[in-house]
Image 1 (cartoon, one colour):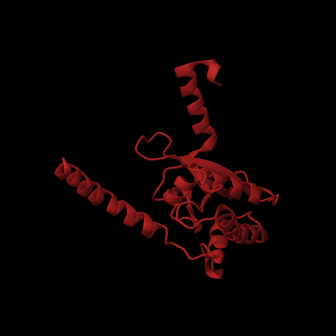
Image 2 (cartoon, rainbow, N blue to C red):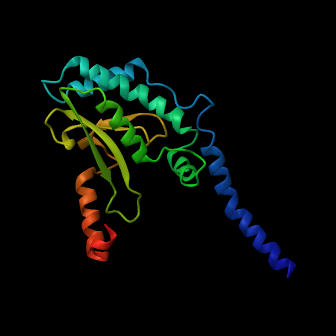
Image 3 (tube, helix red, strand yellow):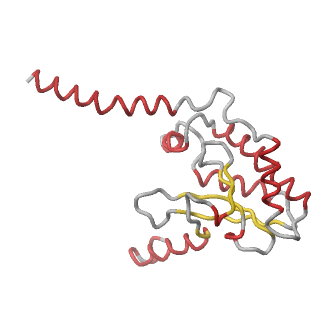
Length: 202
């Protein structure tokens, strides 16, 4: 019986050791100061990307949106207590160890902050990816576009993807995700719930 128990323990150690090492490596992503602020060059590149969205975009609004996107990402990283890669942080949020920091928290807070600027030549959107992929978790993002344009003509603002580092890209050039307008995804989910459970669940 002892031999069997010893074998089980050896297998458990072999199974758990790589996971423990991975989590330890993941937990050492940042120092105590958290993710860094965007550099001037990074902010300027986003500003140029926003300006390129349309000829009627106010340069001052493009500059302000780019500056806020990077600066507020750092503010949120501090508030969310980011010290790990996104999936590890998600686990901590779901366990109640961290206050916020799921992808939809980032998207919601970035969108709210930028909408607070009352831009006249820019519009904020929300989009979701992987909502119909059973092998990947849903992912939410905020998107900025020229006023009057649809979300797919905008730029993804995604601080979650790299755990507090702002990722941005034109929606159509984002190689990692296929984005769908959030309202369409939510309506599709609502219809699915209606088919399964009826009006009682809504």
